[in-house]
Length: 455
Image 1 (cartoon, helix red, strand yellow):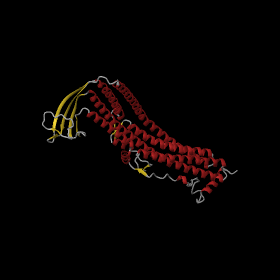
Image 2: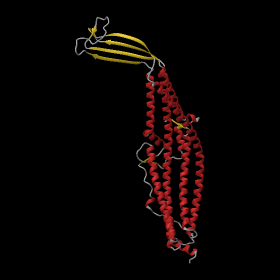
Image 3: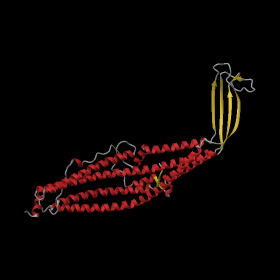
Image 4: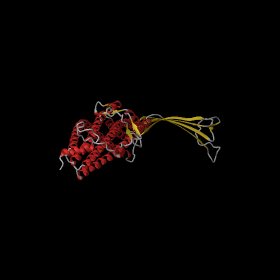
């Protein structure tokens, strides 16, 4: 059997035939660059965002969630105006022309009073009515409820802006992470192909066996599967970013995008809160509770009487002459509810239930927000520690892989060690990328969890 030194010299001579002499170039197993169709990068997306400002402007322009929330604010504003209209003067003018078909020469009933000008035929009339509410407790309660609902809708809009900002930032980070992972998967496949080529040369020289070749080929197949899965994750991340931006196609992130400064850029659009209770979703929940309570008070005020003033001016056409005003009256109207078949009591019970639901929703939102803040703050420390651990693990995996490959080249290690070290290195590289981007996402979430965004 040939000695390891003789085999090593034979392998060096076979792999580097152009070297002038062993003394000038120490024995080294530099791997040739292996070409493979799968090593080609994923084609870029049809559209890419280059800056945070560009992505945010596109989100503002095309987000359906933002448009829906803005429409809810508009609806709440309209309901407040409707509630206010009940308390403001209500003026109406009504005009009509009438004739008696059977007796066209006879004026249609009209009180001529003492005037010498009789109603004309056909008869034209105009009636002007002005109504003003003086005392209506229910209407005032309804106005307060509508105002609280409008405040809640506006706060919900601010909360939607905060969540959309966080969602956009996370989508950008996820896309960049998927881009980087796809690159690392190709490096991993390249290394696996180089190990396969090295093993085949060793088998051809007689120092390896078929089991070694099968193992490294299996490792190449695993690397290919990882690459295919990573490419699909990249395409899905681009599509998710496109949906976030309000587009129906994939959107990529330009290589020049400043991901590290993303937290600082979001600070320009959002401001930190002095206290958690000022967070928009909690403000909206409290406003909904107040609106529900005012609605219940409005229902209970239905048992109270209302007082209003009504003025009516009546005019008609006359013959001879153009016309005249026959009556103008002013009346005070007192309405006292007596019995409505139990409808008011049913309404009270319904709105009491609404109040309870709103109060429970507020308490749940307060608990969720408190827990969310606690977890977001802790996630930053956890992400920092995991990122540091992943970096150390990657460095150790890289050293282990280098030593394992060297040992295998020298005939001191087996193919199983080579495959395992290569797989460990690929996984360590991917873990490091994911941990780095998770750290960025954790910092974004920690800031935006306690921030207010006003676009």
